[in-house]
Length: 131
Image 1 (cartoon, helix red, strand yellow):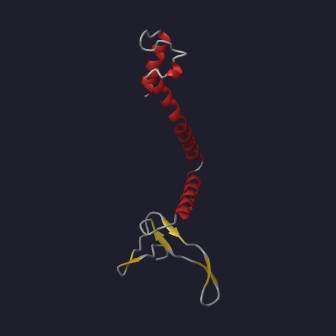
Image 2 (spheres, one colour):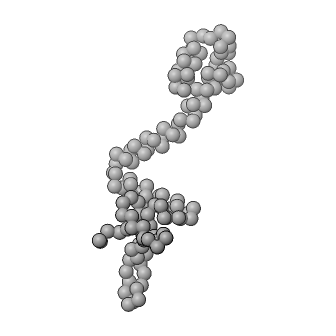
Image 3 (cartoon, rainbow, N blue to C red):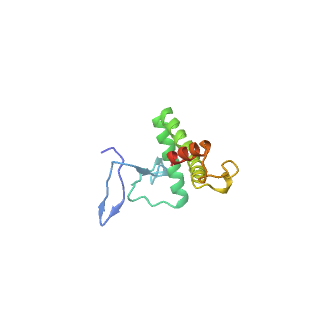
């Protein structure tokens, strides 16, 4: 019975959940006898109700711990996902603008769909393929 568990009491019964994310207090407090000890109070995900700032801090700490425990491959994967997400919208916007013959691209493709040349046909095909 040395494992940390949820200390929340609901309807007279202690939650006692030990599995999943537990938010541990961990503050150094002084006991009745004058000695300092670490507070072992913990809450499970269901009972944890943080403020907005506390929620952001908790998410940042959790992400940091996850990356530290997973190592370099997880960091590399997170970097690839972030770059992909950052590039996704510009690529989609450009592809849509080419397909609908937006005026921005009429300098490059003068007649667009009226008399599609090989360059426009390839650009429209690739844009549609991307979408």
